Amino acid sequence: MTSVQVVDFPETKTAVLEHHGDPKLIGESVQRFIEFRKQHHLHPSTHATFNIAYNSPTETVPEDFRIDLCVSTDELITDNEFGVIGKVIPGGRCAVLRHIGSDDTLGETVRQLCAEWFPRSGENRRDFPLFFQRVKFPPEVPEDETILDVYLPLQ
Image (tube, rainbow, N blue to C red):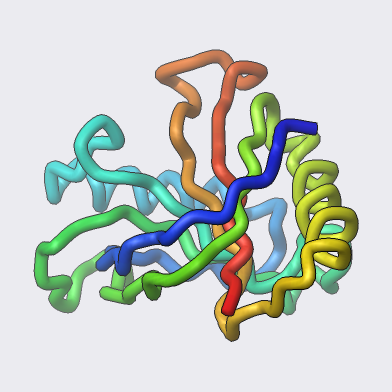
């Protein structure tokens, strides 16, 4: 396990596509989100990509699964055909653990952070869900070279 760092995450304005429902259908949401990003010139090389995880796809019944697909932007988000809305990822202290590899093994990294590190840390959670920053991801890199940072908001 790479080491957990505690960082001050800056408040980040985002454009968000909310995915509600079966995790197997997230690909459709991702494609819609990519089209929004292309139309608004929000390329991953210049605008950070995040996911806000409200629950786990393996521990939640499919119809209750929720995740936000996010891109950082200072652009005012107005009504649009994609259903993208504006939200803010609040700034504050976070524990962060880097995950390298496929999303198929992301659950293990989340478990290491939340079930191993956190109980021993003496820290308290802040009232905001776990979120991920996608640092490198397909098609820019092969799936097994994906890099994402897992953030656990702390008080």
